[in-house]
Amino acid sequence: MDEAELNAIRAARLQELQRNAGQGSSQGQSSGQSQEAQGLSAALDQVLEPEARARLSRVNLVRPDRAKAVEQYIIRLAQSGQVRRKLGEDDIVEILNGIARDQQKQNETKIVFSRKQTANESEDDDDFFD
Image 1: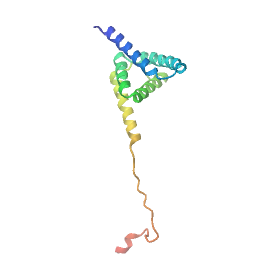
Image 2: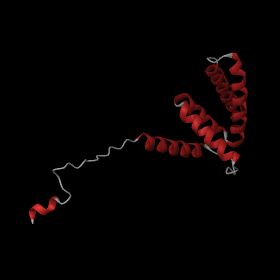
Image 3: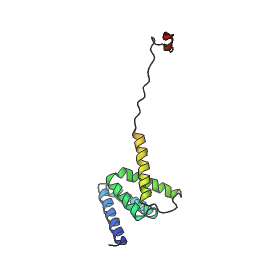
Image 4: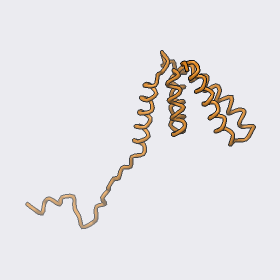
C-alpha cells in the first residue's frame, strides 16, 4: 500500500468513528454538529500533516477531552496567524505534553495550615528563655 491509500483509509476510518460518536444525539442537533465538525476537520486538515492528524485521532479515542483541547488550541493558533507551516506529529506531542502539565497543575491540591493564636499565647514566646 502506498501513502495515499493509507491516508484515504485513515480518513475514512476517522469519519466513521466521528459518525458513530455523533449517533447518540438527536437529528436536529446532529446536522448542525456535523457541519461544525466538518468545518473543524477541514481547518485542521489545512494546518496538520497526515501523521499529526492520525496521532490526534488516536488520542481522541483514548482521551476525547484532551484531543478537543488540542484541536481548539490549534484552531486558535491558526486564527491568530501563529502557524507558519503545517504542524507535524512532534508538534502535536509537545502540545499534548503542555496540556497535560497544565491539567496536572490545576489538579494539584495545596494544604495550608493557618494556626489561630489563643489568648494564652503571646507573640513573644521566645522571651521565656532569656
